[in-house]
Amino acid sequence: HPGAAGNVLHPVPPLPRAGEHAELCSGLLASRAHTSPKYFYDAMGSVLFEAICVLPEYYPTRTEAAIFSTHLPQMAEVIGTGGTIIDLGAGNCAKAARLFPLLHPHQYVPIDISADHLNDAVSRLQQRFPHIEMTALSLDLAQDWQLPPEVRNERRLFFYPGSSIGNFEPAQALDFLRHLRLCCDNNGGILIGVDLIKDAQILATAYDDHLGVTAAFNLNLLRHINRLLGSDFALSQWQHRAFFNSRQSRIEMHLEAKQDVQVRWADGGRDFRQGESIHTENSYKYSIPDFVALLEQAGFIAAHHWTDSDEWFAVIYAQT
Ligand code: AVI
Image 1: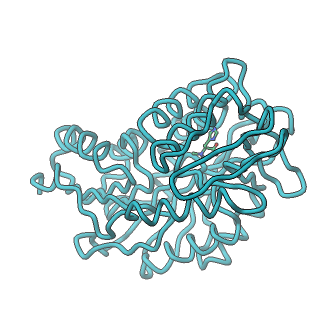
Image 2: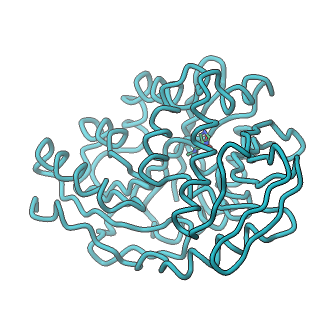
């Protein structure tokens, strides 16, 4: 059914501007200012994130890719073929495309917040794999969402690579996994990438690279907020901070005021003291047993996992 390409479905309308505005303001005005990591990904932010993924310090992308290269045939044996692959945060769809020659899905459902990205990627992919039905969905996975009836229910495999699950708070991650489990009926599963706990210095450097790409990615958030709120954040007054919080097992990213700062926007504003910060991201790191326990709490049965020889990253397959 190749006609599906180029028609991105929007089962849930994107958060209206007013909703984003309110969400951003309440985070910025909270006693500990914070923002949702989804605001990183404007056009510049998405390009900077692609650059992060090829940095020598940012090991997750290449480590996960190596795990897939090495173990894909065995993954296919464990998972089986056919069914529907639902790609969560598909982006350019390249990671899922590598699964097709072994998993032979009947249907492919890429989901991404950006409909433009999806349209281009899916049209190209449909030409390479004309026999796979493709149904693209534009959804914010952090909001409430449901799969539309166009998504077949024969056997659903959720594909969630990249360790993005780490950007949810653990309680939200559990809710999210539970939601996936309920979307699976009795014959589905999840193939998920998880970044593992490791030496704090290796972790911290992955989020504070020598080229300053992650710093630019973090600071670019202020430009995006300026556009969304009409605010007057001056990038030169802020600096990137990233560190591993071992008690909470997470990387924290912050933007720290280098001096006393006044920020104004149309219907509000805030003063920041020197050293005060805006908490912009958490990236949780798990042990394999802890993540397996989370999957089991969500109602999945962890069937298999694959790691690199340093055990820096894991790809886990869990089924219903
Ligand atoms: C998208 N996500 C998995 C990245 C991470 O590692 O948490 C986002 C990121 N932030 C800074 N560098 C990468």
